[in-house]
Image 1 (tube, rainbow, N blue to C red):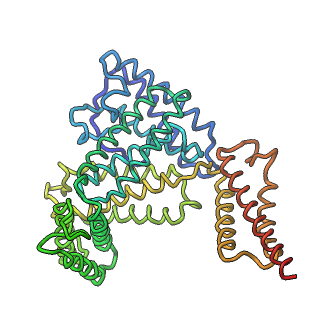
Image 2: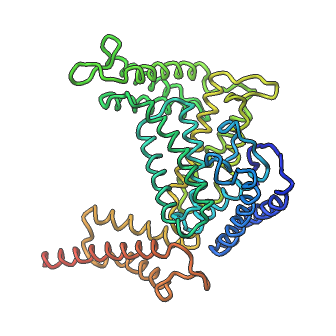
Image 3: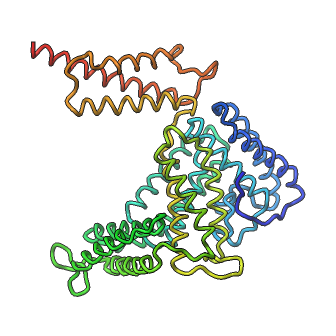
Length: 462
């Protein structure tokens, strides 16, 4: 199991039995995660979740004596990051509970129960990391914040649906975690409040250029020509300024000049630094750089093959490795073993890789389908068939119904896999029946529409 972020090990003797129990639960979850010989069954996950909640109740009873139940402490209790809540003393039992809830959350995604409260936990952690890094980087677009805002709303709605089903302790904790994220999001939105809509396209373009420069800076072969190309774009943008200001269509200076001009200057400075360094990072931070590049590249490959190769619990190790690196910083700075602080190039490069990796995890989680991994092969086949049928329809249809036979045969073979209307795996009925059945029905409808169009075309020609 990947290491969790390092924490204090203070422990109330009354909590020792709880620690022993949650350590055992974490081991069980870890073994279940590693077992790829069969698909993860809902009943196995739910059984461990129920036992975990029992320990949470016991812990709450102990901590209530001191007026500090689990779901209090501003909602970030289990996400043990000292730099976020420096006034909070974290205990080893909290770290292990956080591990367990992270794993349980990813297991809920794996079994297709994406729209249930426990599945929210892991996403709140990832969103919090992303928001912190966006704030630290001090550049982002309104579109970035809009996506995260939508995700937070979706998570809130998920909790509302779970009011009658899940532990109020868990729901309160998750709601508080979401509120922490919402407060951070509000701060970030406020920083762009003065940006006029007239300057938004320029601002978004500069954000894109700055990210592209950072991405080019981490390629295995340094692309000098690409950086020069980005500098040329920056010069084009600068050339549109009049007397040091960006003007709107009415030739007036819209609000938000400082935001956009500051970002433009930052882009020029970063491109100069990157060109000077030619992709070579300070050797003292090369090991961390190589590790982050490896994680980033692995996550990038997963985004390309997600439908066929990702088990959501695989993201846990990536999360923990990234957390460990993130938490190794001293007052936000990367330092080597002697205490030497990273220079600006190394600092920004490593932060970019951290931020990009968290963004990939965020993307993979929100793209997870509410279908058990047991049904994913069927679901993925149907998605492929749907895309093919839509493309055939977009291209003008088929000239003869006979051209649809391969699609018809494949759909029929999938339909014949159902037993009493359910897709079974042995005697189990995996989660996601509704999603798979709806997709199958959509494919049949598309195939039927194409068949009718082809028959009408043949009749007209006859």
